[in-house]
Structure formats: C-alpha cells, structure tokens
Length: 180
Length: 150
Image (cartoon, rainbow over all chains, first blue to last red; front, top):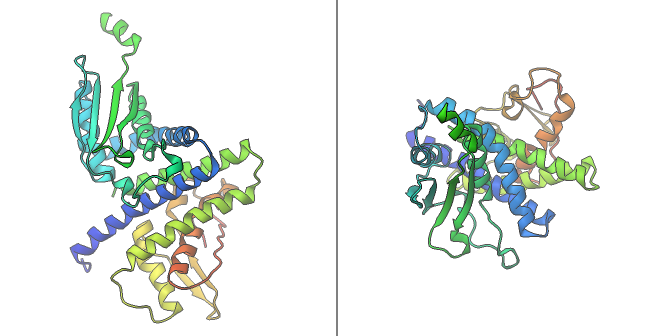
C-alpha cells in the first residue's frame, strides 16, 4: 500500500470526528428549534430509536455473533462488541439488581462529547447523548428484548463518569411460551 | 469501518427529522434545505481544520479543489471524486458517480425528487470547508440519475 499505516488511523479518526461534529451540529440545531430541554431530549431519543432499529441489522451482519442466552450476556455484547465497533470505546458493565435485569454501562471516555466542554447554563437538563439511549432501545427491541434505557450519570452535568442504565423489561408472553 | 453506517443513518435521520418538524410547523421546503446546509457548514469548518492541521500550504484555488476531491472526499466518503471540471474562471464541477449517501436509495430515476434533500448537508460541508480555507463560495448540487451527482 502506498499509504503509511499512520495515515489510515488518522482517516478513521477523521471519520469518527465527522460523526461527532455532525451530532454536535444536530443538537445545536435542535436547541435552536425547541425551547424546552425535554423536547430536545425526546427528539434525540426518537431519532436514536429509528437509527437503532436499522443499526442492529448492520451490527448483526458485521459481527456474526451468536444468540445471547441471558441479559448479562446481552449487556456484555453491547458494551464489548457494539460500542467498540461503532464508537471505539469499551464501557464497563455492572449489574445493578439482584434479579439480573438491570445493568449499567460505565463510560469514562465518551467520544460524542469530544468537542463539548460544558453545557450552556440555560440548558442544564439537556441529555446531550440521548441519541445513544434511543439507539440501544431501538436495537434491543428489534431482537425482541424490551428495555428502558436512560442516563444515570452524565459527565457533562458534573458527575464523575457517564453511566447508561439498561433495564430489561420482562414481557408477559415470555412466561407463557416457556410453560408450553 | 463501521463508522460509515452510523454516519449514513444519522444523516438520513437528520433529513427526516428536519422535514418532519417542518410539516408540523409552518416551514416551507426552502428553510429545511437551509437548516441542513448550515449544519453541514459548521461541520465542514470544523472538519477541514482538523484535517489540514499538518498538510502543506495550498498553492492556489485549483490545488484546494484537488485536495477536496481527493483527500477530503476519501476521508468522508471513502472514495475520490470521479471527475473534476473547471472553466478556470471560478466554476468547478465535481462529479461523483456513486455518491455514498444516495447509493442506498435507488439506482436510477426513482425517488429523484427526494435526492436534493440528501445533498444539502454535503453542499454545506463543502462550503464550510472552503470557507475555512479562505474561499467564499456557493455550492449547489444536481442529480440527474442516482447515485451519480454533481
């Protein structure tokens, strides 16, 4: 190859920066369009959901992973394979509840906020990365796992780390099928 | 690299979102295109800054256009511009025969009327990049048959 290996890495970095910058421009535009933070958060979540339902196809095609047998395997898969593949970071997973259906992904480095220093004062309750929550929720729903995803801690709001909480909701039909 | 899929999806969502908001409000078509273009402008400015940090100074306009066609386009869309034409009086036509943002949509004339929406962001991207390199410009796009565009 005529290109040196360093250049290729730089190109990957630039592609990622393109995504991060585009996301930033999108959030800025939404803030201009909507006055309330909740509206912006909702909009980001909905967009994330639509992206998630399509992204899961791409993910499954690229990674060819086998079926996950438990919620904790699913959470591990999201953290170690999906995040690594799309954002280049690997959050750590911790289980929050005894019943085994609440997990947290802890990100100490969030690439989406690379160019953001702090939230403006009038936007204190903006969830900047709410798109991520929507994406995870949409993707899980397409593999028939209903879940609630939200931000538990956010570095932009002053917490130490960014924490995403995933709560798997048990569907009542599951139990019926198992009995049969 | 998987980032491409993410960016493509985010871009289509953005276009859909902007037009959905316009339908609910009073906005007309023109404003949506402007919004998308200005988003692209901001992104283009930032991107070109990070990209040209270590490259040598450009000799002239043509050099800048060649840079955009080769390196910039390759990094953003993973391929080069297929054809660059100029009249040496300030007008440049960049032709891409397989524009990445349109390949998934159709391979001919279907959905042609929706194509301009998807090009607005990229026009802004180019305009932003050029503006940070010191060139004031107007960027327009034309699609005659997907996925080629000028």
